[in-house]
Image (tube, rainbow, N blue to C red; front, side):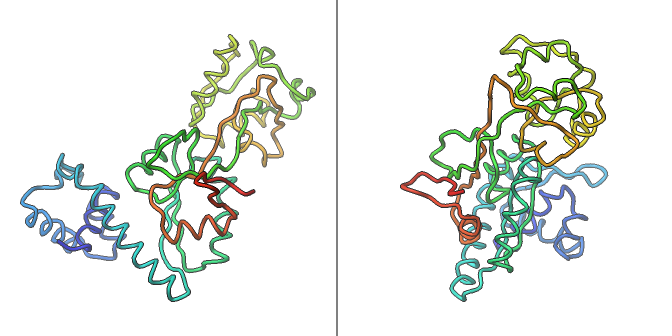
Length: 294
């Protein structure tokens, strides 16, 4: 078995078909097919189920092998990073998972810092929901990721970043915008844009815990759509301060019933690129508890 075959197989699984994998790897489709066939022959078992219209799915055995293959490939990458570090020029790949507000507000300056100090480190962003980022970290799809309410997990390293409070977002012309702080009871019967984004469960919990029923005009999935609806005075919403704070067309007000979500950077395996990312952004570990120095 070779690392190259593992890499080809993982790319096929990631892309969902041979054609896209071949494009990503700068290989011909026949070469990709041959690599997969050779790997399956060596193992003596099929790893992919070939369906109609070029659709593929992994076999039960493949699902068990994938975490081990990813670990092998990651270990090989870390070896290369260590060698490049010894040559005084860190070079490698850093895959970062982030949900929308972290990707748009927290991550850009962080990427700028590591590119400034380590220009040969390539950063790839995987943007998804809270649950998707958590799953990517668990499976090793990303090397490090932003998580909310990470909790205690001995298998994970954590870097606390900040407490992101839930706030009321509205047009500056809305009557509630005249208040400095809003009691959640004041949302009773108010025209409301219900978010279906990653923080939907938090909003629902906040409303139900206080017995408040706003007048839900619509349910919206995408954060940009929510902000556009709110800025056009269609309704108010509840969401993370991190998401709204840079939008000048939205007035944000804190809730008297303050609630927040702790955001942390989480990773499973220490590597030179992760250490460089943390160091470049002045994030460090103190007495075994990893935390932000910002």
